[in-house]
Image (cartoon, rainbow, N blue to C red; front, side, top):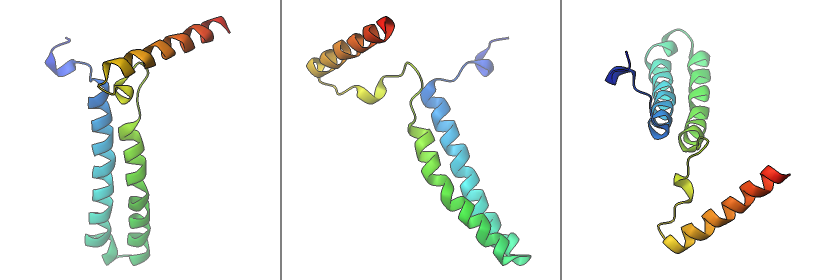
Length: 99
């Protein structure tokens, strides 16, 4: 049952799908507002565009939100810097366990 069609998505794949779903909805709202809805109600078409205008910032936030356990955002490429940050993270984890 767990064939290729049922594999779990990785966090970047989930973020990408959420982002494109939101942006696809945004695009659909704009297109529908001015190609179909405006024929019956211009205020409704404007309202749809206002809703579509608010979606992109949220799509960007959702597309860049990290999931628990992900560390892609703080990998600098500098081995010394990465080692130093890992050491600090380990200290923070120990303090949380104690307190």
